[in-house]
Structures are given as structure tokens and as C-alpha cells.
Length: 165
Image 1 (cartoon, helix red, strand yellow):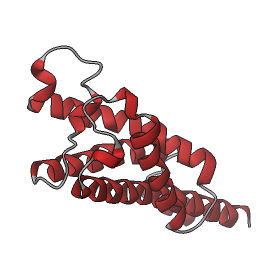
Image 2 (tube, one colour):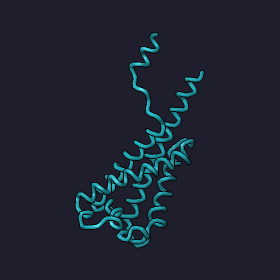
Image 3 (cartoon, helix red, strand yellow):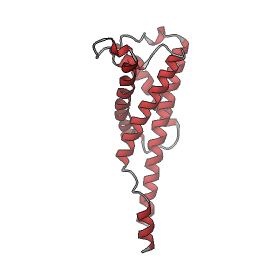
Image 4 (tube, rainbow, N blue to C red):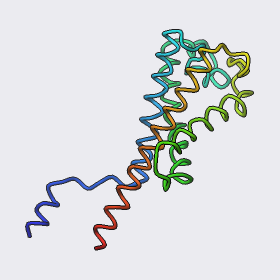
């Protein structure tokens, strides 16, 4: 009876897919906000608004509303990025897989998806500060997504093992 009372005191843990969803959303919003701060402080020439430029009409996309909408939109896109990481790499321990995932995302965005974003210069024509800042942001973003998902996956696996025994 006391074990049931103890269990009733604590909330049920989040389902793993729900945790992946929130990790992706928060990671996208947080790290694109950091990206905007780096733009504002002139560490990079690229602002989050570049995601709206090919798709949205009007000049609002260049104002603060465009910045907020683009940051939220990047958060939504990041949900998919987190689920892709979860499907492919959640079983692998350590920070290196997240770092590698961030590096792969950097090259996907700046090489493969580059034609979709006309306001971003080709990778080799960007200034050094922009490349270094963007590369570091992608690494930290990948590390955040990777480590968060892997940690929760390993924790859930451990809890299931304890419950089975």
C-alpha cells in the first residue's frame, strides 16, 4: 500500500515521443533565438528571417514580427529534426553523435538547401565570422538535441529494466 501511495505522489513521466517533440520545439526556438542574438551582435550575417524570405509576401518578414514568426517556424521544423535523430541515433551514447548530427545539419542547410534561400550567400563567399558562428551554433544545437534524446532514451530503458526485475 505504501508503494502505491509513493507512486501517486509523483507525476507520470512523459512518453518518449512527447519528450522528443518538446525537445525539438524548445531546441529550435532556443537556438534560433541565440542565432538572432548572434546576428544582432554582428557575429553573423544570417538572421532567422531567411527562412521566410522565399515563402512570405510583404515587408513584415524583415521586421520584429518576421523574426518572431521565423523563430517559431524554426522551432516547428526542429521537431522533425528531433524525430529524425530519435529514429536514427537515439541508441548511441555520448555527445559525439549529437555533434556529428549538428555538423551534418550544417552541411545540409548550407550546401544542399542553399538554393532555397536566396538571401544567404554561398558557403565559400560568407565571411569567416558567419561561417564559424553558424558552424558552432549547429554543433551546439545538434549536441543539445542528441544528448537530450539519448539521455531520455537511456533513462527510459533503465526504468523499464528495473520495472521488469
